[in-house]
Image 1: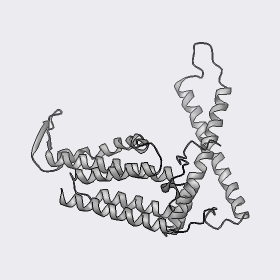
Image 2: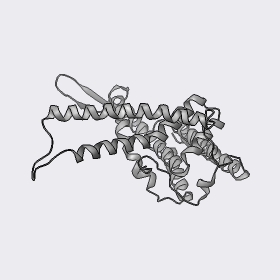
Image 3: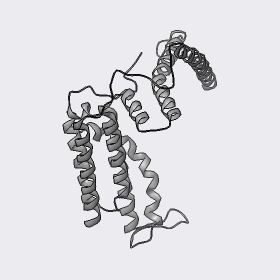
Image 4: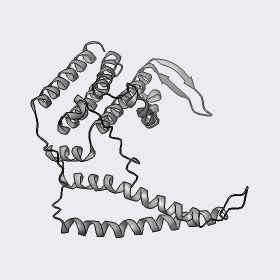
Length: 265
């Protein structure tokens, strides 16, 4: 099994890694809500939020740019909010005339758009740090202890677990196709575009059938072994004094960031 395909947990001996998963999940959610609640243009508060992220990186013994590099993948999705630049009332900054249309950008729209991008960027970094410092089974147990819907937790658990299996099945199908595709030197194997599309469709159908049959076998095997809706781990999942202190300190820092955002807006 290619376990590194989706798993982004980084094994380290650090304070953040040893914290209870419930504390890390709650802090991550509160951090995201804190970013959402900050006023537009609260750059000092956003800078403090980023400083908090860098501090968590340092405490987790990860490279300072670990979450930074991986978070840029989410920025294109934040560009969907670019329309606020031209729809929010304010002082005119510049005007675009694509064809018969006239698009007027305002200062308030630019500030709102930049704030949305920064919020998304910071929130994704915190989520990346959560997955890098918390094993996935511990996160699922944290959601169960936090009274998340049990069906939702079970669906997420199985989806994550069997993405690895699907990836291996797809790799085997691709390897079988390569083994059966003759290639002449200097030429590509296979036939026309329609032929390639038909082969790809057959492979997708085979992957679906194999996944469906395996899921039925796996579920029956789990029921035979005493599965009752959740997966057991060797982690005791007990809150310690350090967990309470870390959670309280994080909440205090988020309150300070909110105060800075309100006072220095």
